[in-house]
Length: 449
Image (cartoon, rainbow, N blue to C red):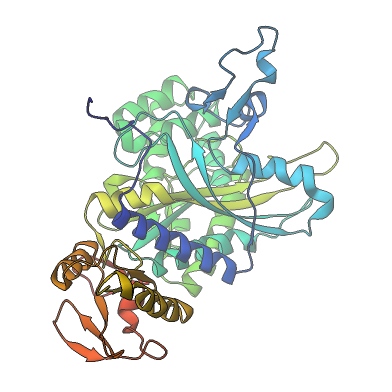
């Protein structure tokens, strides 16, 4: 039989890696729920036509068709796997608005599919974890601070390097570009969004050719993109560039409010970075991207922003703001670069040894008693010599082996230290650090379990 090759872009984790993923997801879910976000799940597909009008993503969408599709099915009737969770959420709100209380706070942890070119951190199937707050006709500005701080709390609760949420405002950027002489502000946004990929010289050329800027105007836009500040000092830096426009004033005031409020609550977690643009067209205000400190070259692991007209039925508009954690993308750097370790690859804390086939029931009774008190327990697969059963536990990473003697007495052995003590299955508990697998930063004492 030929060797089975992995399918590029569709990650599958080994058991120890899956432990890391599960604990990341558990932490994310716990923080989201602490802040009152309700869980939803949407269908995997959306109408293709609806998805393609939301931004520059058409080359990445997977279309869903039957193998023998009807030849008379119109292209506009085609379905596509969703490429993010924001568009499906907007549709969900419109469809269920009569059953929701606004502002509606949702979190969604789900797989998405995107036709990326597979590389580190880029997958064709991956898990996202989103939070959004969406209102009816209006949405208070303070939610733009809130979602950033909730995600900052997620990162501080995870076993990962420090994270910085970088924030800009689309009104600020578009107003500046228009004030600098751009004939097409959207083209200028798209050019600036490519700054880290193609460099300032090529971006300047795009700003002139696609956005209609003069060489001087292009250089001012590049100077804007260099501004980064953890406090509100960026406001004066923007003013010093000498560009004026009413939309710039509005966006600058909004970003100043976000940074001032965030720095008061969680200093250093949220930073103004005026090169952040976000490529999707539906963003209208605050936009976010997130970098891991020391791994900035990896790119953003978490992003989002304010959208005012993504969800509308023609009579009512549902403005919202959200931020999305690329769970699989984050895991690819944590696992791929050896930044985290799991204490074991199985949930099992105790293996109950079996002395002989006749004694298996006694071992099963011990296992049932331990499980009844929340201790993950297995019974040895066979009545092999005890040394072989201990080696089986060691290979699986199980820290304790339980023995039932012929006289009915019990003992438990920590196979790492060799210590063995008398034990009662109705009262004995493993140490807290051994009860469940622990995920920790490599070479770091901080951990989560």
